[in-house]
Image (cartoon, rainbow, N blue to C red; front, side, top):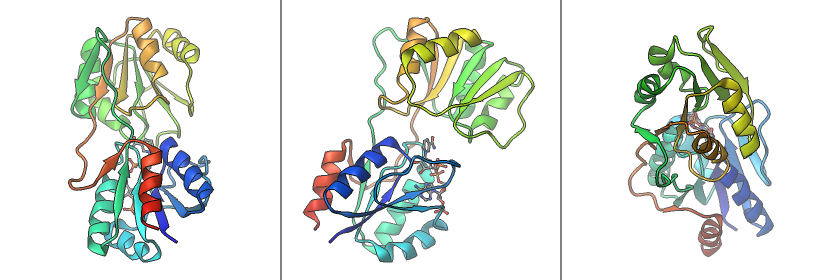
Amino acid sequence: MTRVLLLGGTAEARALADRLVAAGVAVTTSLAGRVADPRLPAGAVRIGGFGGIDGLRTALADYDAVVDATHPFATTMSANAAAACRAAGLPLLRLERPGWAQPAGAAWHWADSHDQAGQIAARLGRRPVLTIGRQQLAAYLPALADATVLARVVEPPSIDLPLSWTVISDRGPYALPGELALLREHGADVVVTKDSGGRYTWPKMLAAEQLGLPVVVVRRPARPAGVTTVNDVERVLAWVLAGD
Ligand code: NAP
């Protein structure tokens, strides 16, 4: 039977783990360990980094196939998976939700990096809401140190932030009424997000549109070349079962 290593940390990975377990596939989900109390998927789970490409390659001895279902912005893990699978001769499939399509008339401003997103946000407003996670907050300090920032994160950031910044810890799923209230209560004049894609964090985009707020969207980073990518869980399931 195919033993699958599923690189996770996303809702899609949890959905896939459910389907693989239901189909009788031996799946181990790997989590980075960033979140203190992660939502655990069905099947086996391992937590923590592998120790770079070499560590991952060693770990691959226990598996027959790898599915990379990490977040679109988790570029190091994806690059390591591509390199380690190539070196070990293991099949690798990428599961990735599509990026968001800009609705006609929506006031989106695309940024190629978090630094650039900070600069654009500083031009657009003084009360930004940052929904880009905690790991990249430092990139916003040069442009937004004096702004009245609300940063929503899952886990508290490890860096010191200006007194004019407020951090709230929250974990989705998010719904439109709550997102509208968040933006209104802060008096937001601009929202910053990554192009995470999917429906999970989409309500904030609807809320921004309803309130007439501009949104700065950080473009997805480049992916490793040569890795087949699919968008839905069923296609991964078919791929795994075809290898049995
Ligand atoms: P990253 O920058 O691509 O990876 C940094 C290092 O963390 C990797 O080299 C690896 O350490 C370890 N790592 C990452 N994902 C792992 C996994 N699934 N299992 C085991 N080790 C993992 O990753 P990141 O952006 O910090 O994201 C970390 C995790 O959070 C990912 O699983 C991702 O799916 C999830 N996540 C990320 C975002 C985001 O915006 N980046 C958003 C939501 C969820 P070693 O080199 O030691 O193996």
